[in-house]
Length: 550
Image (cartoon, rainbow, N blue to C red):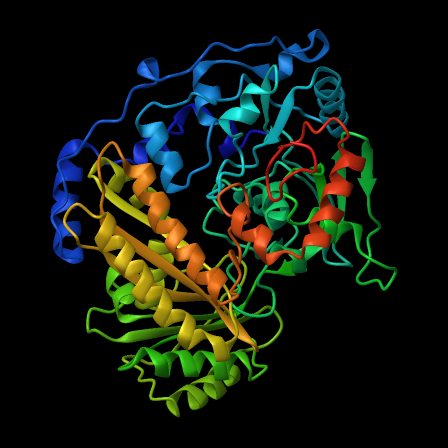
């Protein structure tokens, strides 16, 4: 079917998303003044991106197999578009025209059988194959290091976005069989015909594919209970170089280690997820949302903890410190903010909100306006009446576009996230603030920087803190500057035994710290699985864990 992903000519080859969402010079200059005033340091004049014609892009080294030639594309645009994910250093390298390790070609299979044929050819010719998903990786998950790129006669980026159909819907079991290349909007449009929805909305929802979400253990919009894509996977169809791996559709099983769990989070190094049976939900009818202000961040943290441990299971329970709330214009009063929401397709949720507000009031949370309760039937507009929640939601979706525009203004802006126990959060947070602020000041040309925190998800035993850091960039040296800050943050997380990533995956960026977090013997298990499923070592080599043989 025709979908948003197949109109890729309108996507930017270097920035996040659609080309027409990037600001022109006049708008960017005005925007820069606002940003500088908000962050407390002046931004630089807009710089133009290197045009694709002037980029470093070597010629393709190998021709595709004749039997599948019409499924391959070696045009400069597609090769550049598929060269990187969209982390800050990826955007910078694309902005500067550095595509030295771009794939030699991009494969667009249309069936699982064609995926198998591509992997057979690649294994026989030592061609590296990197599953691309929607290209939204922020951990260098869809590119090869220069030395690995050079070790193969060619590198193929595998793009499954032509495999974007909902193949079957089981309304009785509330599940559907969906091809791995379907993006969130594309699959949900098809599910809407049945009154169902896959309620999993990562920040990359606009472009992320189902296979990519599963392969990276994507975190979604539910702040409690159903926080990761794992909870929605019923069965997987995976194509490894050695052959297919297909699990049964089961609501649960005690039959030993799960084959699905081995594939979920493997980031395309063990196999390619060609389709999946996913657990669905009926479209929510009843919704309730509230925004609460706190004088002290720690009180908002306490409220989130009690709410996470209350078994009320809110769909949203996100804490924003005062700086984060101001950055996203949720509150400009210097208050920490707690966003709370409930939703259901089966029953009104106002009683749940009333219980939550009673609990939060005991922690000092104040309601600047009453909670918004609404009932939405099919055909109703799904608009919210909660202005603060709407501002947060819009800022959340637009943030990647903002980052790309800031690159042109010489502003370094990025995020990192983790998860820890409630008892460990206070010490971790204090150390992160101290260490990362020091790193920001040391790396910034002006010695200035911005650091804020929010909770994206909460559990009975701990939160998932998410930090935003911003500072003036050293133009021409942005990647090294970013690496210094990122390493400082990662070392703090490892010091406190907080996870190196809660939902952004491992890729190559986090591999050093993931190796430390993962038990050594389990790494050997993964290496053994890699050798069994991909004996030629051609699938996304070097991602997640170090292979047994380099």
